[in-house]
Image (tube, rainbow over all chains, first blue to last red; front, side, top):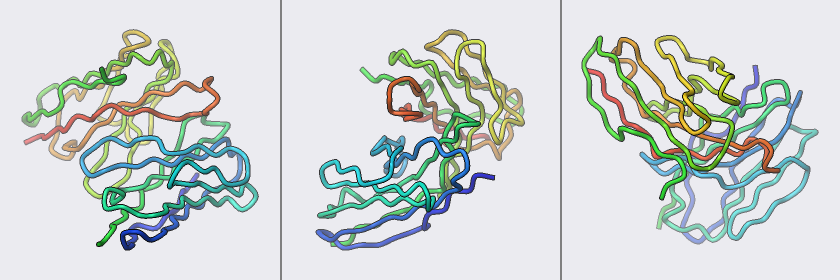
Length: 110
Length: 115
């Protein structure tokens, strides 16, 4: 299979930094995506990594290591509105489409 | 206006009824997807279509069927609804030639309850 593993839940404090990890099978890797989903709403695209390294976009950054089958999403200066589920998804060459992880529910506390 | 729309947004129906959920997009994307999401769980792929003449089963296609009427429209049908099909259903689109790979754009979702 093409299991994607990420922690089920995380808690952090407003203003802090949190890192959400994602591991995946490397064979046939063709791209990694992070999405944010607030409760009861649709997922929205956050980032796309296809090459190794860090992609920064405002308070959010995403890192990829293709050889290790590892990515993380880094959220800085946490705000209450960042409380949401964060989905890691990977596309593979043979399938073309993405496979989603089960998501990490992040709770930001005052 | 939203780029990906779903109708209806909410639906309550009874066991055994036939239900159709519709998805339309104005993004001009070739790829379209149907997912279901159960409380506290991730997205599970039901069907996907890479173009009008291409339809593929996802991981949980039993009990569902789809129709790709045009590039912009992808409908999901439950032939005979059952209570365990109660879930939140999402349609999504992507443009693999955009330089962003399979980045997907989701509709607002349809909340379906089967009594």
